[in-house]
Amino acid sequence: MKHRGILLNTRHNYGQTKLKYSIMAYKKTEQYEDRITSQLITNYKQTISLLGEDAEREGLIKTPERVAKAMQYLTQGYHIDAKAILDSAKFHEEVSEMIIVKDIEMYSMCEHHMLPFFGKAHIAYIPNGWITGLSKIARVVDVYARRLQVQERLTTQILEAIKASLNPLGVAVVIEASHLCMMMRGVQKQNSVTTTSAFWGEFEKNETRSEFTKLISSRLH
Ligand SMILES: [Zn+2]
Image 1 (cartoon, protein in one colour):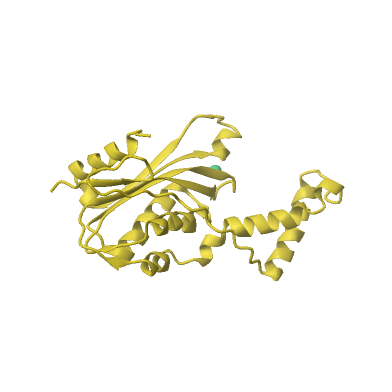
Image 2: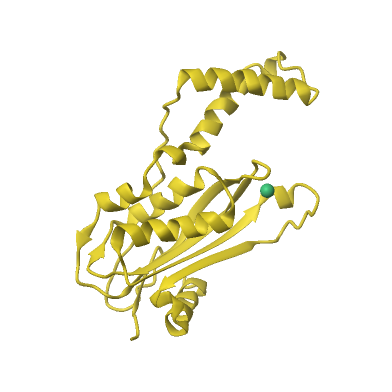
């Protein structure tokens, strides 16, 4: 079986389906638990001192609070249910074409150094009667990226969420990312990009998988 791809987030329209997709910025929510914030402030104040800085000097005085909030924001994914997001925009549709959302911006934090890694996610699935809102796919990336992560787990968690919600014929996830922990310290391989991938169902077949990789690696815009 050959699947025609619907390639999104580029100006190219593959097949007859004309879809244009732009990823909306994830709305920043400012909800912080006071108890956690105040404990983090104490911890970061201490961290700054331990690093040899004066936590009381003007430029740093509000830093512990900012970091406390930033870190909570960057790890908010723990409190969000990815499957529920996909389910919320799930609808019945008799299509069996490969649906691809490519170049989804991704920002996460490596769990080994708590430094950012960032790049792009490319996701495809082949529906089995159910599809979901395209922006929801991008949100699922955020849900799992906003945690302490390793790129490999991030890749499979996204795949599993799509599989669980849509029960599709196949799912593919490829993530290309640069890791600041590699770029800023030690190794200093500044241009190295780590690629991880996970394939399930139809994508375990060579033909389908190579069609997907061909589509995501084409630079048409
Ligand atoms: Zn790291």
